[in-house]
Image 1 (cartoon, rainbow, N blue to C red):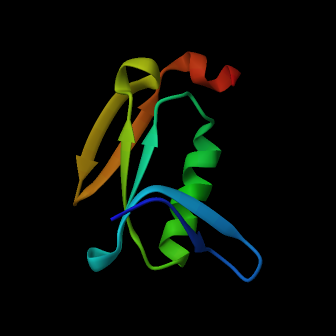
Image 2: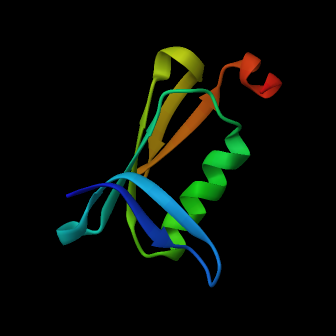
Image 3: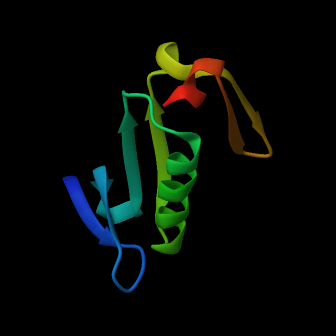
Length: 85
């Protein structure tokens, strides 16, 4: 296990996983602050490009209005105030 593991998502692009379990290629993103949904999507795509499984750990009390899962994929609906960030 590594904390703040740096990995490539493209030729000149990197991302930093908060926690990375190398044996299983699983990255954890701990998101406590509110960030735009587009940034979450971009980070998720970066993990996919790198071939890593991703688990988001999100403070749901701060900015998630609804969380649902279909076919093993979780979907997030943000609270309206998130659009202001």
